[in-house]
Every structure is written in C-alpha cells, then in structure tokens.
Image (cartoon, rainbow, N blue to C red; front, side, top):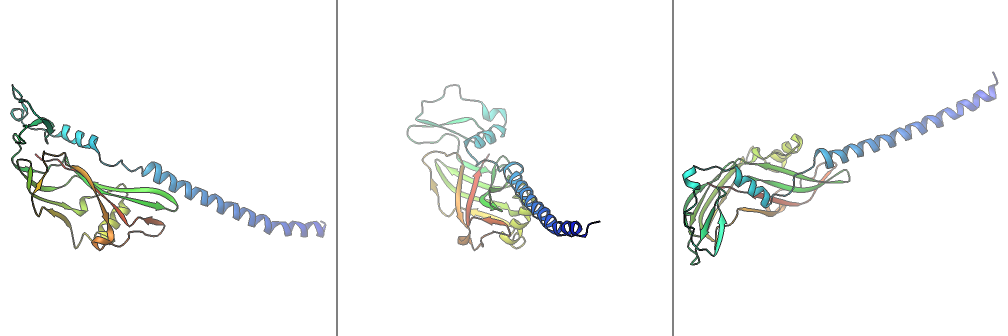
Length: 234
C-alpha cells in the first residue's frame, strides 16, 4: 500500500471526526430548543386569564334548592339587575335597596383562584399558572355593602401543570411548611353601590412581600405577577 495515501487518509480522519462532533452538537442544541419550545407552547399551554366566561360557567354549575330559584310572579320595575351566586337574577330597586342578598355567604368549590407569572425558559417565553378551588371563606352583605370578608386558602392546594414548579412554589418561594395558609380579612366595610360579580386580578410585586425573584437556572421569571380569582358564594 502507498504510504503517502495512507498518511493523507490519517490526516483527514481527525478533521472528519471533529466535523461530525460539531454537527452532532448543533443537532443536540436544536433538539433541546425544539423540546423547550414544544413544552412551553404545546404541553405547557397555559390557560387564559380568568374572565367573565369563567364566572358564568362557575355560576351555571352552582345549584340551589328549587324553591330558592323560583322567579317572582310579578317582577318589580328595576333600574338594574345583578347576578347572584345561583346564576339567577335579583333586582336592585331604583332607590338602591337590595332584594334578598343580606346575610352571610359561604365560599364554594365553584370558585377558582391562583397566580400567573411570565417567565422565559432558555430563551422561550412562557407563562406559569397555578390554580386551586379550595377556599374557606365568609362574606357578609348588608344592602350593597360588604361588611365583613374572611377567607383562607391552603398554599399546597395551588398547583400548576408541572410538579417541579409546584415544589419550588411551596418551598423556596412561598415556604408553605412555615406559612401553610394565606388569609384575607376585610378591615373596613366596602360600599359597592350594587352587588358586583366577584371576578378580578391583583398585580403583585414579589419584593413587596419579602419574596425573592423566583428565577432558577435557565428559567428567568419576572419580579411581579398576578393573583387572579373568580369567587362564588352561596
């Protein structure tokens, strides 16, 4: 065999080997990025923000005894109408007096609440969403005024679509082992003018509550998020 040809073949082999390694590395990066993209945009396709349609659906699933849902035979002339937690319509008289809402209202499992935080996973934008419907609460209504509200949720009941995120949420972020419950107590009455649909969101800056930015490794998280809720009482 020609020694020169053999030498040339040996000289080409390392270059070819390096080329295949480089191509393999590029292919691996593409596969990893594609996997992250599929996870964030398809598998982890976050639910939309809670809105009026979620409230309507929650009200439709709330049931009451038939006697309570029977409409009056002669509905009064009204200035406006509002929906209560049964999904039926009660009236607000022109004078502002409220019909049949006074008293204590208990939060139900038709409620839904949780957090929404924008994040970037290895360069791909995503939204982290955790929710729960487990709530203990009492709302007291007098006319069109909420005179008292006491609510409590267990942090561990709030879950997302990823157990790893949930573990970090309960651990380093919320420290649920030391602070297992989140509570809300109304400090003074709120006059609504009419009974509102209890639907909304509250912007939260983590530092305001002593929570560090929850970014971790390749996951970069905004320093703020939303607490969103649909609350149904009966």
